[in-house]
Length: 434
Image 1 (cartoon, rainbow, N blue to C red):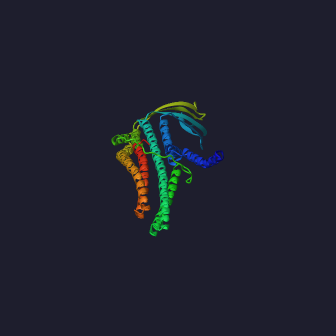
Image 2 (image 1 turned 90 degrees about the vertical axis):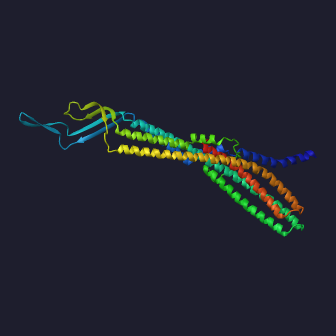
Image 3 (image 1 turned 90 degrees about the horizontal axis):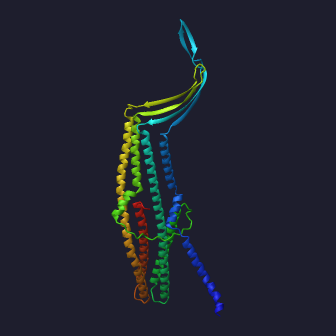
């Protein structure tokens, strides 16, 4: 007897085992927030553009460094004249014309030039390019953190929409059960028809809200997939995200933000680059000394040595240029002064961001505690009111009100939970730790 029923029990457990395995597989395949960040950082086009800008800044730095190295030039040409070049000489009362060059000739020259002193023009240009590269790298860091925050926002919105859909579905299930109870009581003549109509209207409204929640979930997943470069309709499974329980004093966070926010450091790098550029422009009016040498050949059978080696030590000093270089340098310095003001303004904005997000973390943490206790109380209240209604001790409106309180308490708790998670991530971004 037992052996005969044993295979049946096994067959009955197989669907449950399959469902459990599917749930475990779904949880194993769920994507975490760091994994989402890695995917987005690899595919985001805005970040790729920022990396290209950083590469351009690296090329500018190499170009500035190359300006201090020797330059080598090659020249060649062929000359054809309509007459043979000659000079006139008076010898013993007679005028003579002697050829001095060929009518047709070829020439070439190879020269190397090494700048010896440029008044700081080259050195300050290199410093400006190096500061510009550092600013570009810091700007790329800011773009990375901004992208990570956008992904985190979409991630949390996906979790929030999924939780809200579950709340809406639980509302439908609860009202459906209540509608069945009211229908049974109405058939027994124990409640008025208005109760039945009222619960049906409430159930229809709950189903409508569930449809809206499902639509919101689909949109949230599509927005998340777009950031990760995936098809908008790709299935999404996300790991649950817990709020950060750590608490750091506001003053310490603000101090850290003002030191390590990459946007502030990037502006400082741009200011430094502009100041070096101004110094480089002023260096154009200082003496420029260079050493050059090479070999030149001029085809000329009337010349004893057609090819010659040469060395030249040259100097050039632009004593007066009408104030062009000075005005250009002044313009660049004014740009640096403008960026300095912008940096000070940004510092105050950063301090405000840190304060706002820190307060959000504090507020959402308190909301979690309040809403967590409200859920248990709302569920107990609904159970009591339903029992009272079944015994004719309360009205149908009280049941609907109790169910509304239960749904609102669950929605409020979910909102507080994900608001707290997102507030913690935004605080990290405000400080520059994301």
